[in-house]
Image (cartoon, rainbow, N blue to C red):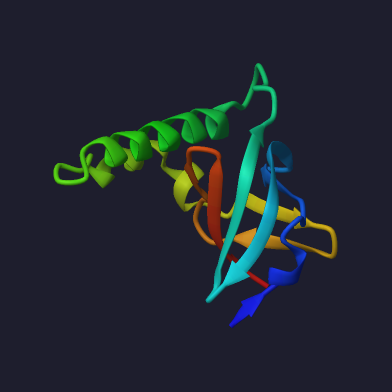
Length: 118
């Protein structure tokens, strides 16, 4: 079921351990997956920047995938991020609720997607 398609200008904040990582726009949900575009990354903090390292890596990994879809990069490369990928620390703040992200968001170019618990 698709929700929030009427609110394509909806804004959301993607957070890691409470710290603002990025702001996304045109947020909507379709079949259990949320999507946002125009992802503006927040300034990198001096301490606790593992989420920013993950975002940069994720964007680069997807760039490499786009450049060579017949020889995709190894998804095992994500294991080096451990709990950043598998932990419960990602949330998305919408105007009317806070979503707990399952795993980690996927960052590709200026887009981001995630699955969430209500």
